[in-house]
Image (tube, rainbow, N blue to C red; front, side):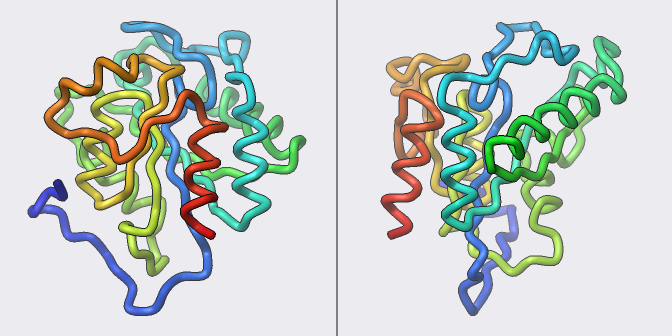
Length: 197
C-alpha cells in the first residue's frame, strides 16, 4: 500500500529512460551479517551473477540506481572515505563488465530521524531529482522488509531476493509484502526485463 503522506512525482508523458532501484548489501554484494558492515574493499564480495544482471539491465537501457542505508558512518564504525573507496572500486568493476550504476547512500543512524533512511523515501527523490518519472513503472529490488516498505512508500513495484538477510518464506509473515520473489539479482533482472517487453 502506498503511503498517502508521500507525494509521488508522476510524469504525464512516459520517460524513455527506464529506472531500476537496487539495495546494495545482500543484493549486489554478500550481506555481511546482522550488526556487521562492509567497512573496506577487502570485505566486499560480489554475489554470483550480480555483475551479469547489472550489465544486462544497462544494455536494455535501464538506469540502475543504488539506494542503500549505510549507518556505519553515523555510528563511527567506518569513514566516508572508506565508503567512497568501496564505491569507486565497485563501480569500476561494474563498468569493466559493461554495466553502469549511480549510487545514493544514507549515512545516518535510525535515531537521527533523517528523510533519507529507508523505509523513508528521500534517497529515491534525490536519485531522480530533475527527472520526470512514474514510480509505478519502476522496480526496487531489496533483501529486507525495510526495502520492500520503502519501495511501497514511493510507489515502486518491489522484488525481494533470497540471497541476502531475509529468507523468502519468512517474508510471508510481513504486513507489507513484495510484489515478486526472486532467488537473486539475476532472476530479479529477468522479471524486470520480461515485464518491460
